Length: 160
Image 1 (cartoon, rainbow, N blue to C red):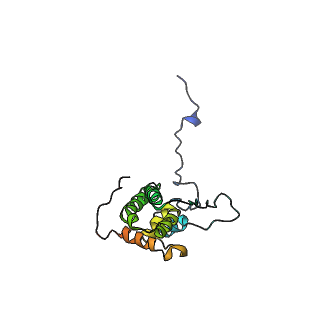
Image 2 (image 1 turned 45 degrees about the vertical axis):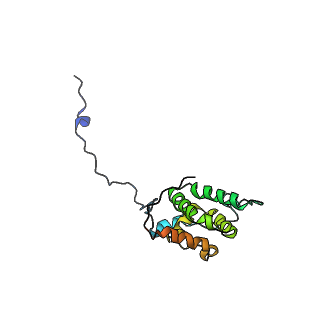
Image 3 (image 1 turned 90 degrees about the vertical axis):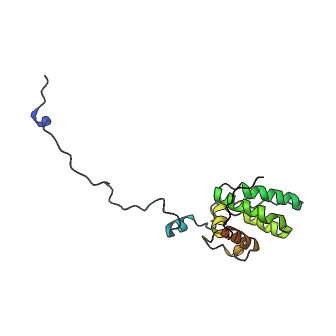
């Protein structure tokens, strides 16, 4: 049988350590939704002219597009946004209001759809105040009324 030296055979108890060896208090990288930290971190900022990557592309100019073709495109763009919340809100809005919109209202709605999804969602649900260019918008006012869902109807995605 192999015998170990006496110094090694003793039981050594490790010292208890704190849960974290770091003494620096770190901020939570994922703040809870609707807290001031979350709102500040997710607010849309004006693009820095020195940074090329963050400058948004200008919207496509669609010269010569008829009203029926524009209406069909807006229905599609309202439904295929990228976030389920925006898809549901905008697709049901388009289903209910797009048929009666004038060409001018459709152009304004088209410009609204060029904004980021979460901005539109928060503006419509009163999560954030819209910027000055959208503050007096008739389309955004209609969208906000639609988002209130006064009739408490169950909404689902309309078929294309």
